[in-house]
Image 1 (cartoon, one colour):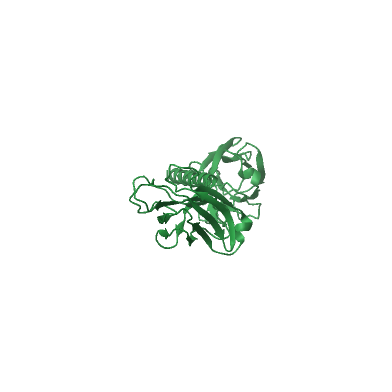
Image 2 (cartoon, one colour):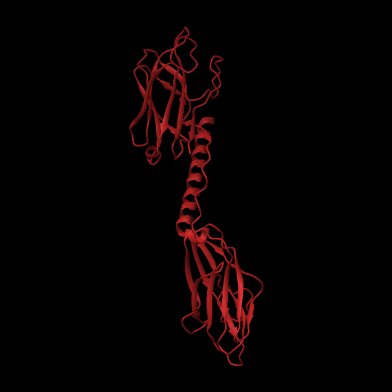
Length: 309
């Protein structure tokens, strides 16, 4: 029962890890939006003037897309939409120039532009800036890259963002203890038993399989078994004929190593072990760890999987 609960717990852990991975990959595929801030409060631009403001939260050395949205209001007794000249700059370089109306205007073109930041551009030094020139004949107030606290109902809620695909998390090597399905296994003579093997990771790595068992015999006796490691697609990864890990008679111990390749890691399904008993004696207590085995001769050991970066 204890091993069953551990297996169930391991399965839940694997499912959670898989869900988190899929969630991350889905987010990475769609891109992440990072809100852009403009230096200071909203800008006032007198007629005939140019105002330049720095843009923050565009990360250095990161390719992506600047999704720029701009709004402002003309100072006029009657509601009026006036056009500004907008320049997007990086350092001293002007990357985009447009003449457009406020984002909430009913006139076109509106100031809503997407600018692709290449890796080469992202690697260049310099501050990102927005430059607005007002040649409209009316003073402009409330210039901003987001709605913010603008009280005018006609202005929809919006922000300017930098959209990018986050880098995959760095690989770190770790070792997991493998679990075998169910409790210890009894294998009658002449029989073969197959059990699922849990906690083999979905990446290249190393499976180190150890196993112990006891022959049903009045006299202490170590008998040989054939153990096969089965891939999720049913192919045999490795076979070894050996004696229990705890044998003290100088016989070959059941220690099996297998290098999991990228192709193996991409297989769907469950790894398995298949044990064949042709020894002439029934076998009890087969397991891939010591567990609760009361025999003092059995050392404390586990079977493991270690991923490789």
